Amino acid sequence: MPVEFERVAEGRYRVKGPLTFASVGEALVASRPLFVGQKSLEFDLGGVEATDSAGLALLVEWVGEAKRAGCKLKLRAVPAQALALARISEVESCRVHLVMPE
Image (cartoon, rainbow, N blue to C red; front, top):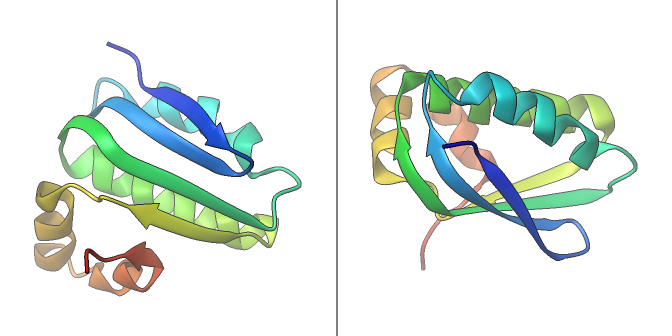
């Protein structure tokens, strides 16, 4: 199943599907145009069905893509598994870019 980016408002997208080894390459290619010309961008990951270390790598790449584009990135509803992988992979500093549940 491919990853989908459903536009919910200007600069806001709901991400649907798995963020796994099988899908992240295609997801990265599909997401790159979304950064162009944006001052801020928000990905709601509530529709992510599964994730693994490749999914975490994609989130880290999005942070870099946003920085290169001069865009403020917010990640909402980050899957618990991705947060756990971030902790054990020592990339928890990416959490600065996450919108944590209240």
